[in-house]
Image (cartoon, rainbow, N blue to C red; front, side, top):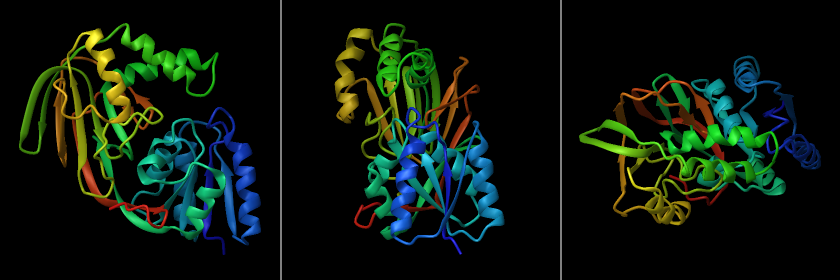
Length: 298
């Protein structure tokens, strides 16, 4: 009886995911691993496939093969079933894998799946929507919106880079009133990130102190600043060195509510949603996940 069921997003990673998974199958066959798999064909289908495999099959581990959006869908599909999540990071950014220290190369992630250990990681809900890595709105959402037009012409991280440049030239300010556990914050800001993991945007360390196993999410807020100050802050932001700098508010929490008069799109693990959430909540240890031995998570 196969232990692993792979949910594959063939167009992830600029269309290279399917080719990489063909290499995965060769390695699994060499190791004598029994498995089943299915390709997703549209947004949301990975969740449906994962849910069906979790409920109808005897598989122990449902493996997401794709990017961070695929991980989110597969995790949503198996949430509450007791099945374990596996991750093959074959997308563009692969930020969740960075947080969990899962190798990005084919041989490394196969080894991590076969010989890894299972730990129970936290998940976060933005109202009713579950996400695994980072959720937020403001600058990062605008980057994703602006990136879409460039994806029609370019591949890889270049569209994201162009999206950042365009967003920087049209910085938008949000007035937010935030209540987080016993803390209240009211300010004009450029972005707010609620982070279970450390990275987003293909390695931008928005939340360098996040631990997906500690029972908290980390909140990073960048207050209103002019474009020159923002440009000077960006290199620190990329490297996770922005914590403690004057425009940045950073803290840990279990629950957070947001009030704003604006209409903002929400970014959850690189996927855009139309409505600003009113509340974020952590659910501790809710998702069993395979991580490499010695990854020092938790």
